[in-house]
Image (cartoon, rainbow, N blue to C red):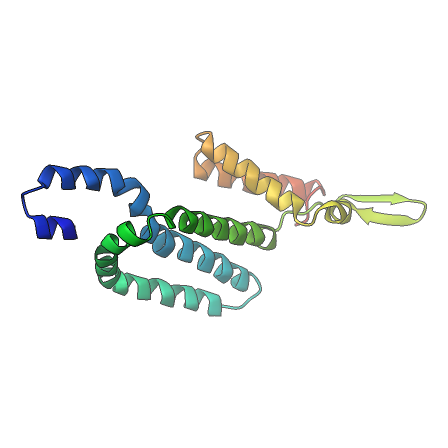
Length: 186
């Protein structure tokens, strides 16, 4: 846009072509960081704190979200002004930044999934006076395995076109039936 302001109508077609070409790679950086990564990470932390009876996480989440909401005009101007700098000086580092942010988001969400999703077996096995639960056996193999598998299954079903409401209802029904049969912990 800075080029457009300086060049006026002299290179209008070149500017439109440049905007179209850069729309995909550059448009997602600020939006991804501010409106997707931060609320997702803060929301997961707030949910984890709320699960343990602490409401401070919710208030921090709300405060940060309201702060970003009121700063959006300022952040727009920062993005507008730094667009040229980003294009000229950091174009070679852009893919590394995008990859780093993606890895950070995946690592945080991957770590939070087993902590916030409580999906455990209640089956018990007894032999020679020793009693083990199915969950203890699975936790020795890989802690949080069922939570991760459930999340992966739901994600896969969501990508196959299932509606979110259907998946939520399915999880509720499976949890209720599993708890009633003594397979899952209530």
